[in-house]
Length: 132
Image (tube, rainbow, N blue to C red; front, top):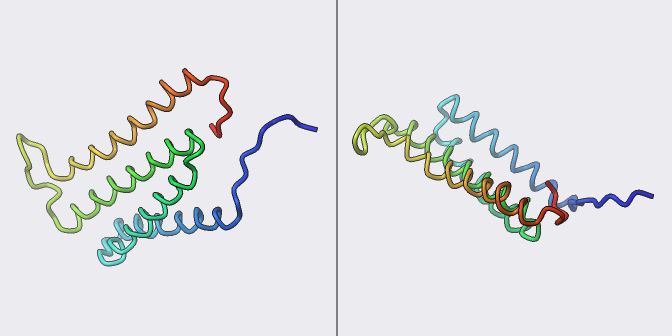
């Protein structure tokens, strides 16, 4: 018998995660194909399910950090997509900075969350059982 710990995901929850991937792909395909109504419509379910997944995994620090990084990634991509759809992506905000570059803010927040997990949490709690 193995003493290795396991991380189990209820089937109902796994189905929601799989639907999340479908919504995310539809959002990004719509962005690629410039299907504005579908792309914009897919932001809501993609983001909401990502937030629900983050909340449901709150007892595992590794899952919380990775899932919130995904939430901020989706938010950044969604903003960037909207800026392109409505042609304000290349407009200047300030000193050569264009509106699309505002997407860097949620991207960096996601990176900072993961940096905290790998550089602080994992170092302090080396022996803590986590999913990653």
